[in-house]
Length: 400
Image (tube, rainbow, N blue to C red):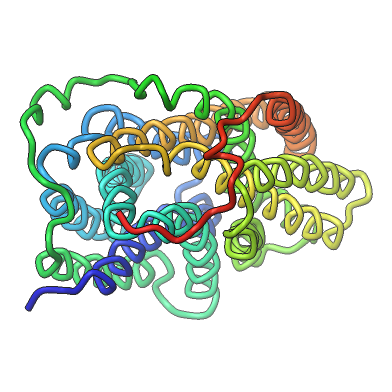
């Protein structure tokens, strides 16, 4: 039995959703690991950052491979590796095993990201552009919260969530077997494995406009994913593991809602709103620290999350609709390279600052100020740049 185009589209969307859910699932568990294995907070940021670096490495090597060999072969390997990685997580008994699992997870996610996104664009360019922005945020939000609930309410907290995810990835592997190929094979597969960062010249102006917004949005996501759970527990004076997932859920969830509500707006409008909301949301978050107010903190997370969604969607819609079918996986991989650099490096630097004299509140303030500056640069750049006519138009349904 072969899946039809509609079923294939939603299968692809589910793959990136659950891959990102898997990446955020360990977030509420870091406190459990820390209590069991006795490592310092900097280890959390290293484990978080090494996943981002593994994604980057794979994006640079195989990011455009599916443009040459097809989407299915890449996704079959990625889903199988991702399922196996969950067993490494479930049987981990120390930091080295956790690091190995995060590296494998990063490699699988990096391989899948470009192929999934390009496959959705192959099937439906308009829906694919929106899904490429909303699915990662839905995955990040749902993975963090569901992991927190499973950890808090059910037995075997460091095993159950990974077994559930492993089963999902195996079902997705079977789905990819039944999915028709959406991209024609072409020569150059081996050459594409040489690490490179190249964008078709006509897309470079749009990418230069989008890049500062991508960096500011994903630097904020990196902070919430690594130090956010510690910060909110300090503000609330609670050790609940659900809080670790709730923080990331609020941020990514509000971003996903914003993407859906603004899907028919022009890319420039969405990007402008997103960067402005990032500035306002982070300012709220910083105000919550001296006030020791969890309410203000979560209000800031909602606003910043809307900014996160707007900045990410606007950046994707600046670039991807202009990419030709044989360029899609490679160009989308460049976008993810920028995003994961923005996630990984600030998170690790924040962890170093936290341990060596900064403390969680000081580190949060410094990180937040940096995000505000980046978002301000993105906002000013968006307003000053002259946009191609295609970018200024609202999104309209269009096939392939």
